[in-house]
Length: 228
Image (cartoon, rainbow, N blue to C red):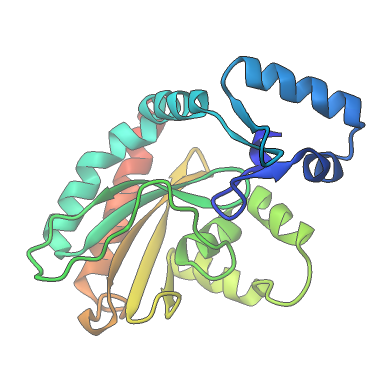
C-alpha cells in the first residue's frame, strides 16, 4: 500500500487504492487504519485522500543511514567528483526504478548541476536505468510489466554490458549522464554516475573521466564484498 504513493501521485483516494491493490474495501480500510495509527499514512478528511505520514520520513532516514553502500561509496564519490570536476551520484534500486541516494559536487564550475537526493530516475531513458536493466533480472521484470512502446531493446542492454557503462544524452537538455554498475558478489548493488554538461565531453569513450568512473564503481563493489 505504501509503495503506491510517489512524487507524481502523493495523494490517493480509498477507491484508487482498492483498485490498484485488488483487495476488498473492508481489507484496505483496515490496513489503512493500522498504518494511520503508526503514522505511516495520513488521511485528509476534507479531500478524502490518503498520503504518506511523517513516520515514513523517519524510517527512510534510518534505512539510508544503515545502507552500507552509502557509507562505503561516499569517499569514492568525493574522490571521483574532485578528480573529474563533475557531479558524482550514487543510485540504488527502490523496487521499481533507480533512486538517487547520494550526491557529491566538489566542482569549481561557475554553474553547478543540481541533483536532489531522493530523485527517482526514469527506467527506460536514464543511464542508471539502462545499467539496472542490463544487469538486473528484477529490473527487466518490472519493465516487462509495463509492456508497450518504449521498451529498451536487448541489443542496447548488451551494448551496456559490453561497455560496462551506459550514457544518456538529452533526458535533460544539455546534460550528459554516464553510469557504471557497482557489483557485489555478481549482483548489481547500485550505480555510480557522473552528471555533466554535454559540452564537457565526459560522455566520449576515450574521456579520462570514464576510467575514473569505472575504477570508482569497481572499488566500491570490492569493498562491499569485503563487508559481506
